[in-house]
Image (cartoon, rainbow, N blue to C red; front, side, top):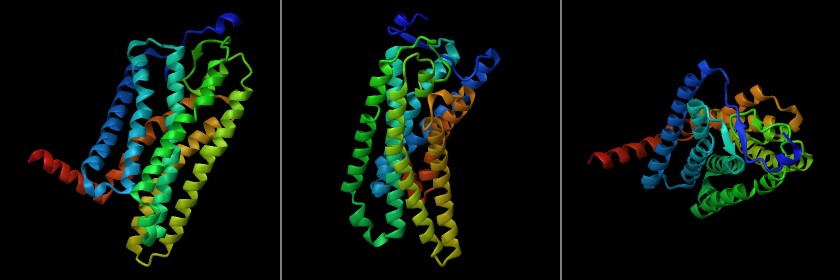
Length: 310
């Protein structure tokens, strides 16, 4: 591709999960099924929390926001991937690519802040239960959720401005199943130092700081649980915390490994696998771990079912 012409690239070609024709249909069916389960699970969470007055507490307000993020997160990427697998039309316009990249970064940023807020909420509820009402009022919870959305939506602005000015003279083929930052930098012939530095700075300030806050919250929770005299109570609390920490570890682990590194160390097949973990697995597990295993949530489901059947 001519370097001058590359400045006026109008579209990219996304090379999905597999180039082998025999694999396209099985992958399509699998992704479609997973997408349906993600939408169903998170929509159930939203409807039940919205329709159950006893669930209008800070914990469930944050869960509702997390489900909204998970639906938006997967819907930003999976429908286009499904279209590519079904029609084999790999083209995506430059503008659409930048929009997908923007929402991918924005929604991931909102999620890390929400996870930190949820960790703080559980810390207050378990470690300082007598002060929970004052420290986690609905007003404070709403401010935390609003701040997460505002910060997250502003976060990708610098990335998009810098990436949109890059030249793509190496190729217009994105060796990934969506418009991600690393594969875009890989095919650019421009100096990507500014983009990579911005990525490290934002990653350090936002991703690592929220990860540490979340981790500290759960460590303090575990210390408090260890003081519980009842073996049954300790087991139940540990079961919940271990599930939360599993989701958090997968989410942060993949993000830190994939994005806190130079663009030159991009490994397509490995990165596609890890990307699937936080784009598909985490939104699939979140409703199960945070809501569907919760007794109060089951009461909410029963009330909604009774309203619909009466």
